[in-house]
Amino acid sequence: MATNDKNTPGPIVVIAIAVIALMIIFYFILLMYFPNLFESLDIGKVKAVK
Image 1 (tube, rainbow, N blue to C red):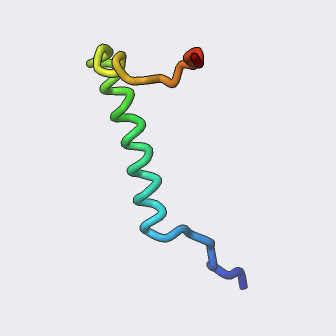
Image 2: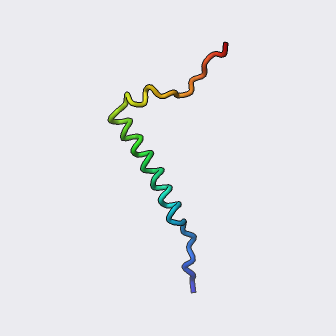
Image 3: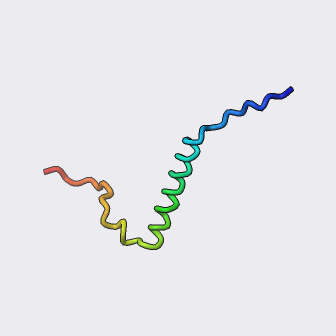
């Protein structure tokens, strides 16, 4: 008598979440092996206005 109508996300949503998770893991792997790679990036420090 119980119905099996589960609210499951579509395949595009699942793929998008998996890609975001893989990008985060890939970023931390790059940080481990190449720590100097991200030192030159601008981190948005506040500069004095003249």
